[in-house]
Amino acid sequence: MSHVECLRKIQLDDYVGIVGVEEVNSVRALAEKLKGKSVTHVNSTSFGGGVAEMLQNLVPLMKDVGLDVRWEVIKGSLDFFNVTKKIHNALQGMSLDLSEEDVRTYLEYNRMNSETTILRSDFVVVHDNQPAAMIQFLPAKNDQWIWRCHIDLSTPNTAVWNFLEHYISRYDAAIFTSEKYVIPGIEGPKVFIRVPSIDPLSDKNKEISASAISDVLTKHGVNPEKPIIAQVGRFDPWKDPLGVIDVYRLVKKEIPQVQLLLIAGMANDDPEGWTYFEKTARHAGDDDDIHLLTDLKGVRDLEVNAFQRASQVMLQMSTREGFGLSVTEALWKGIPVVGRNVGGIPLQIINGTNGFLVNSVTEAAEKTLYLLNHKEEARQMGNNGKEHVKNNFLIVNDLKGYLTMFAELLQL
Image (cartoon, rainbow, N blue to C red; front, side, top):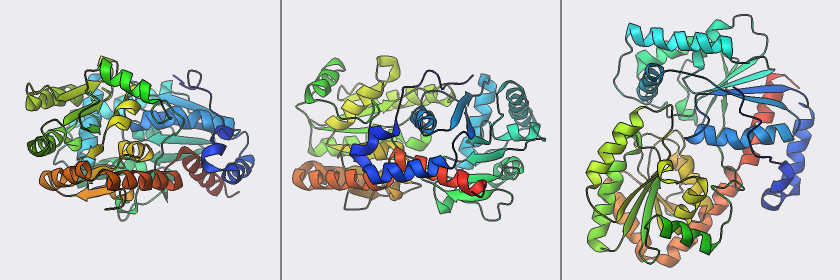
């Protein structure tokens, strides 16, 4: 089904105060050449995770500048999403094999969705692996198909990539977050490098009052008088929530009053999430200063916003990370980030300037302690982080990138 009608109304002019009138005008000039062109975005979930979040904001903004936009979410069984999570994990480097039954399940749901999803557009943008094979079942297409890869493809499982590449090679274009994710020898699609973005005016990122932040903390049992460190990210082995708890325990030896917030949405296309949530809860034990905060406890965008703004240090201990929008969100709010030096994290953290890049739990704890003990330096790092996001990772820049790519593909 299309998810455009239920999205909030967004206008490009709303961002003039953030990016300036000149930038807004340059985007409108680009859009003028594409007025009336149709775009369909296809992904696997309407909520939970960075892709759905970006589309919730990008789709209405594309409409505002004159494109005819649809957002289609594919349907699948638990078996299908188990297979696509297996493909996701393998593409990020896990040693996994796809069985014949896995392949059958994957292709059957792609075939079914190709028949029930409305895909007649000038541009069809397919996000990640779940719907990637739908192109196989639409051989008579005369539009432009674009595959958008949001994950870390720097060390993929070769056999699983070769399976997927059979379908990706049929696309007209492929978008990767970083040059290092482009598989050598990929044939077929024209390659584009584009970073993701956040919407500074969304509930998750807009300015909110100190009293609103305090209300959220009180409601969820977090003490505003005690230091807070936090990580936002799915309960997933790649996000390493167990490592985050280990960082917290090392910090707590030096600062006993510190609190840890682990904040996540439970997405319906990630059946592994519950298993890892339980594993994380066991690792946390009965420590009252560790808070596991999910949408099932009423933690939605505004609450995430409040928790990030209340934190002194944000962590991103992912062992693989396509980009890491939670890093972007924290930096936008002026909070320094300590993150592992992997994937898309070093595109955002300038080591020693707006946070720290680390390679181990021990190093992460040392840098977190440093920021907690050097408040003025942490504040300056936070200011630097906000400026870095403003210049590189806001939604207006993302929209401009899509418009530039569409014009190039049409040779306008």
